[in-house]
Image: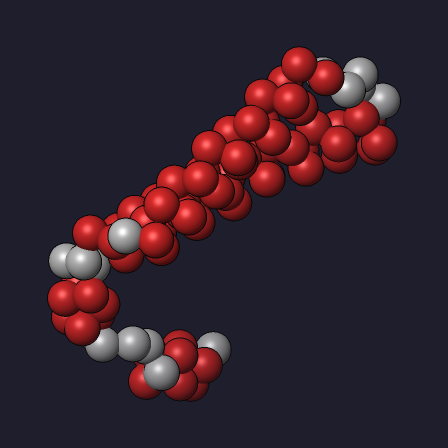
Length: 83
């Protein structure tokens, strides 16, 4: 395990360069979009999982809301890429 940790640490990126890149507002907006899309998709997927595997009812209004949230993030992402 110790060798694995050492190998992993040797391939770790140089974070100071990442911090420099994060000074770009467009990149920060795109990161926000990516995190938001993943979060909303996860919430939608979790709802389906609960229905399929545990028999909970599908919450249609919530499903629509989650899809709307992903649409919002997509629109922000498109705006960030267009500017």
